[in-house]
Length: 567
Image (cartoon, rainbow, N blue to C red; front, side, top):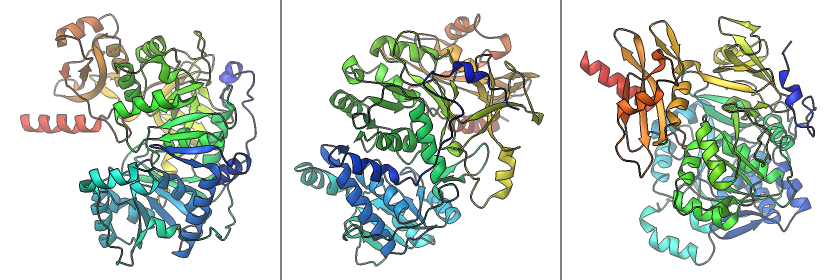
């Protein structure tokens, strides 16, 4: 029996044990279009698309996909940045009965090839950009892929931007060979009346999205997310929100939709609310600041590195965040200092969320929409479980046993947003589930009020001469130094201790030289002796993942190579 210590911490307007009903994910478009046909849903660099127009585009895309062979269970890849074609394709694939497979525009040919073969993707939607098309053409030739559907970025730009883009960005445009029967123009896909054939969807069983992840370990695996998994996760977020009004909410699409966090916490939740999304094809700081100042979003989601960038941008004022109702951070831990500094500068409280690809993704967060000076959040906490979600802290050495409150163990989760399993990988699926609970691979604890605290990823744990050192604890201490902008801590080989912590630090602009010795002196009353970094390296920039969160793997690889060269 799971100890539901969070019950007393639940907002009064929310019941933890609510019974959610899943729906087909494309209902998000149809329900909003029926109620608010002329409200703007997409603002793409000035081009506005209403819900009625989006519904028509989606229906025509569904018909177009069915004409080329998409039916129930067929996999269709989306290899796109944030643009109208992404949203149209996503819901058009689902209406046609297909399964969406998300592909990062930053993938290498090798990564694309692996995912296409593993997922059995038959069709791929992309754009005629030099950054995408050469890779798309190569995998068309080298894999089972049947067809490419190629859009043009200017076809959804307003006049005169559509003509200016073609003129000034000619070097960035790739000219597809449409005489090749395997390559179809996106405009041709939409060239029909939208009379698609309705497909019967079993929302609890049918996969809506194959979302690839490294999982808790190893080779990328396709998490099978059903229509219900994804739809209910939106309802869980909605239940935790306060003061939202259907048809009046706005957000900005800075996070990439091919990532599960943005797919749910930006795209799908906004459609659920009948809101408007101002899209940015990729995150570029100055453009993002202009977008915030212009659109003044009411809903906002970003990763910590984005919040750090906004905090230090000289031209971003309170005005950009003046209408915020809830502001969420996810994808990586956010430091208490960053949250406090952001609240002080912009008068906005960031609610930290936590989740995994395998959980659609949201597992927990601080109740959203609290904008007085007394937040319902606790320092360094990832909040309480969202409704209908059980979180259990298990003994890492005996996973069937639950740890008492306050004791650390592996965070395990059960709820309607948890995936069916990994595609074609029964072994990995069995390894990640224990007694019906999904193992997250994270080490943490639950306090007496039901708030969850992550200590660290189990795979990031540093084993130092018999001591366990958790990088997150060291990072949080270093982040308190006023000169520190970003920090990542990893374990490096140590011939005496086995491993020892090394910190990589990027400093704030405007600070003079800061030495390693000064950092160590600053940390001495904040960390145990065994937790103090044995090495500190200052860098102008730290490596980041495709969604902008700090990445350790490049640093680990560098350090391993350096260690081997010294041997």
